[in-house]
Length: 295
Image 1: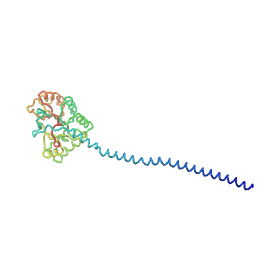
Image 2 (image 1 turned 90 degrees about the horizontal axis):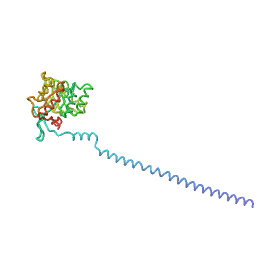
Image 3 (image 1 turned 30 degrees about the horizontal axis):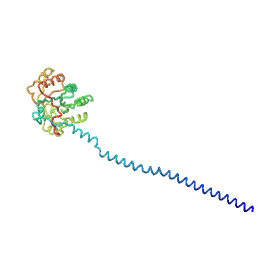
Image 4 (image 1 turned 180 degrees about the vertical axis):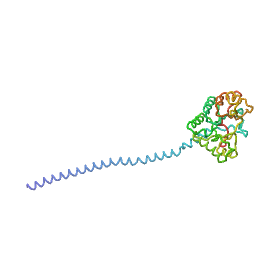
């Protein structure tokens, strides 16, 4: 009996332990399953994120493709800002209206041999008087940092820039290769300083050649000489004398192309010259309104 009772009790203990063990295993298994489900959800959420980013990136790419490039916008703005030509240079170098709706009683102011000594002062005088002009530059006056800044200052004040050759050479006395060097070299120097090439060309001494004509036209510049100028002559090298002749020269008339230089007496007389021309009824033509080969 004792043995049977002992066996029965042990068997009952074993069964209860087995049952507890099974219950423990089931509970543990259930917990593991729950943890696995919780862990798997963030993984699924993360796997969806890249596809959303890819769509955003595709949308961004589409927006970038649809936008104009900055340089294209700049070019469009420059073309839009370019004024319509109102005047042209005649075969006699005067300024003539292209249409009937613009003033024909105008003169053009031009300053040669810039920027030697007085060009910036002359530009400031003209700026104060709201008087437009062309500054024709020589390359040998653009070598130093200070001289380059002078040209930049003149350009920033709104004045048109012209090419007057590098060394002020007589083009009729040099070869075609040398003529090309005299002209191209200045264009490159000016562009490096102000960001654009000269709009006009004037040969020293008015000595043009067929080769220079063709080259200047190819480069998109308007070629011009002048109607009259006197400030290099000894008798007109004072403020009073140059003022008088520039206002009352017999050559003056509608469209006259006035030649002056970077000289002390001309700089001193410039304000009186502008005032005197206006008192005579002349407006000063804006060089940017003069027709060029490319417009």
